[in-house]
Length: 566
Ligand code: HAS
Ligand code: CU
Image (cartoon, rainbow, N blue to C red; front, side, top):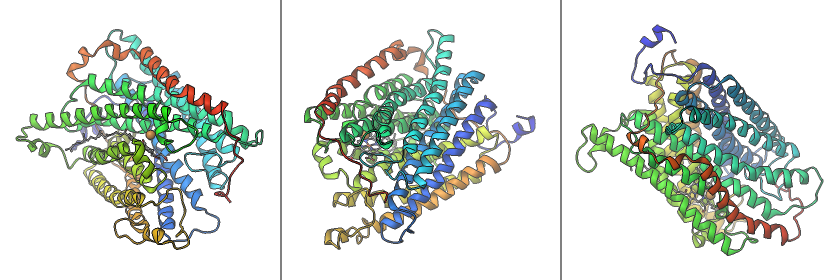
């Protein structure tokens, strides 16, 4: 960083301690892959929205399920994972100092392994040899290269995760008796969650799907493979939301010129996520045979427990907003709201994400309620639910983050023009999602199934109605999809500009200092052995007997069913 760069000032610059350039490079590579996956992913979304609404016909060499798989894998798995690790590497470098050469190399090894896995899986999807959707449910079968790709992807993220955790624990060892920086604490909780969850994918892929796709077995235990998938699949959604919460807890207070309400509460929330996010996968299988109602009931209760840390988060962030707004002179019940920096994309995009998470999280509570799950399971409602949770709350938070993180690591400036472009992107994304996800929710209540290509079910009146409503039809979904695609293109442009074309300079890495209550943080919150132990105990409690039953009382296995691909 040169003196002349430091002299360039605008609203967002702040010559503070920076991410070390070598760590920044590792973070940057992650973010580049994330946004290219994003671009391809949204193109898939557009095609599939138009095709499902009957507005276009796909060419014979491209199938609906192939695009659906590409869309889900590229956005839900690739975009999220890469941007999260990019954020973690940069944030750890900023808050815990530069990585040692050894640990950085481990991070790179993880990056390359994950990338090789991604390329293998993506190639098979493009070749129409793996149109198994992002949940890769058996008995749909993919090419064995797809499964090997998945394993490499997971193991690669474990290596990257190990590098981050080792960096954190090194700090902890060097500073005995001191509470660790919140960023490292939260990143570590998220990574432990991810590693423990990934064991489920490793188990089903290595123990079931891979041997089966290699022809070593003819049949597969479907309920077992789905259970192992959801053992991973639910913590997966927390792996997405926890880094978004990290932005809310650690970045937003700084951006709005305030301080975090409470550090201990934030730590407690993350410990609760670690404990209760995993033993809850059955809430995705409430309508499935082969799991007794008792175990569904237990996991449903645990699901309602894992809502608590999200409510703690809502409280903390709301309190931070009010505290800051009042400190800045906001009066009356809501006067403090006016003091928030509405014109700053670093705040505005995540804020829209938070706002939408209120109905989105409420939808989650509906899903988790057994009787209501019977109404919405396997309908478009669920697709609506995940487009406003991960597709809006998480994605808008990551958009907001990109506007400072990318220029920080590329040594550029976030300009006012880019800030405005970000605000427009946020509005477009939100409006597109209102149409699309709103229509999906309503159509789901009218019985429109998910995971289906264009069909009118032989012109059945009920199915035809799904194409007619003004506010709730496949046409509305497609319209929302077009607006979303426009927003997505704009975001990709923002990314390219911030990465390679913005003026050189210094952009602030907004990171709130650990709050005043940090020295009062109860020491047991830092006791990782205790939390990992309890997490494992809860998992064993919730899963041992049902999995034992699935294996020992298994019905005949299912033969391969692949008519989606052909
Ligand atoms: Fe979910 C299905 C239950 C949260 C993602 N979910 C899915 C699927 C995905 C997904 C991808 O029980 C589909 C998987 C598939 O392909 O089949 N979900 C829940 C519950 C929660 C929940 C109970 N989901 C999420 C999050 C996701 C996500 C987060 C991604 C990031 N979900 C389900 C169930 C299913 C399901 C069933 C299966 C359905 C089926 O049958 O297939 C809870 O964690 C939600 C708790 C959150 C809240 C909201 C708190 C509000 C906050 C915002 C505060 C706002 C502020 C601003 C501070 C209760 C934190 C205020 C300021 C102002 C000025 C107003
Ligand atoms: Cu879930």
